[in-house]
Image: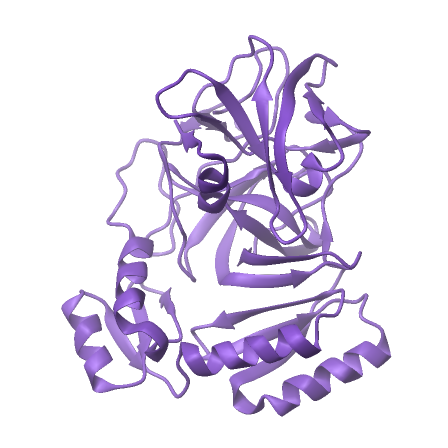
Length: 345
């Protein structure tokens, strides 16, 4: 999957691997998958855990509310940490936010490090709405906290190069195919798929036609290749090299990840939340997003998020930029793959 054409550079996503919070150089071997361990332990603990994260030393920490949970975590090779609130209590706070505070320019997700729901408000939230949000968060007690972020939560399409359609520019996420066939497709953001029924490369050559799109709610779309375009299963590192993408997975909070887009190219950061709800400033809402500290800019939409050779997500949007900094949100790629019955290759 690196570039989606020999004559045109179509943005995909760069290589970053995590374990102990570091990036592995190309060719190095991956350590055991902390996300898989976290998912397995969370399934065992159910509502008694607020989640898991990687600490500064790269150790998987799983929050627990009782000694039985702590024993399960230790048996699974992770470090338990006792917290006051489990997933059930924090989930009730999320439900309250959804019912009473779905305000454009806000986002929320469980932060397992602080054992709270972190509620964010960007600069577009007007005083009246901010007052309402503060009131709702205050009513949630110590299960939630409010933070204000610079910039404006927005999707990141823009006019220009890379994959072009409907008068906008986006970035290719991952090349995929139907298992057992040679039929090839590309994944990108759903808000990009909504405005374009075909994509062209920067030379103006049409390369793919829309199969399906989902936005808002989700943020993914699938396009089938319609021309004999080179489409290897690697991603563009924007330094003259490619990195193979061999599988798809789910990240863990605290993990270092990489992201590439056609505007800002390759940047890295850390995962700060899973199952994040984002209320973009235009009034659209997406749920189940991956939140990170990676910067994004206009035109990066659809670009790939990954760690080492594992695909993780498709760029949805964010705030700030890659000069002053910002944060970003991603559609989990596994959901898109399952929705369309396609696979990474």
